[in-house]
Image 1 (cartoon, helix red, strand yellow):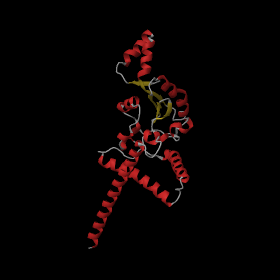
Image 2 (spheres, one colour; image 1 turned 45 degrees about the vertical axis):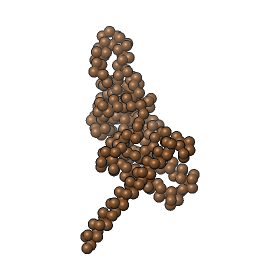
Image 3 (spheres, rainbow, N blue to C red; image 1 turned 90 degrees about the vertical axis):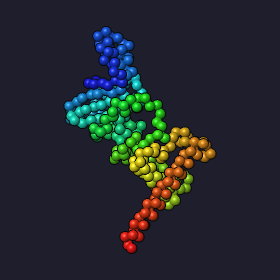
Image 4 (cartoon, rainbow, N blue to C red; image 1 turned 135 degrees about the vertical axis):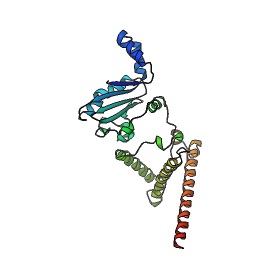
Length: 254
């Protein structure tokens, strides 16, 4: 690899010890502390798939960490990849057309990353140290940016929702009304967090809530309570907004 980043400043001592003394313990230490591998090319992005398959994957496999970042810089274009829990994907979810099941041909390799996608050192450490995602403590900044590449995932999700509605006899006006309300709540939740920044997002479902056994389960009741609270708050905000608009309209016409 052309470059590497480790999580410990003493890496150079281990690197020197391995090359000068052939100490395999130092080599193993480097593998355990490798968090970013870098490759530089000047091939006008003609062989991105080959570089990923034949070089970057091998670099990621050198790391013993559950998470490692791979960076390809080819003729001013940037490509970021990640290994996370033995899955190899683009770093930004927007480029993984099949989500966590993406194969090389589904990684949108024709699209480079914007430079703004480059994570900070602390961002990479958070990836390496995080064991589970605490969805109850996320703000809008922790969400992935939706792009055109997400269209397949969104279509699959919408199809799944419609199939579920069909099973319970809700593919009608009432069912679509519920679906529109759900999407509206997600938008409201994100706009509220973006505006105030003082509250975590409420529109989510945890693994415990998702794997409920009956409607009486405590975890599911927590989910229902949270979504109802969000709906009541959104309805109140909408009511206040419409009343304000009516007052403005009244003043302008009188």
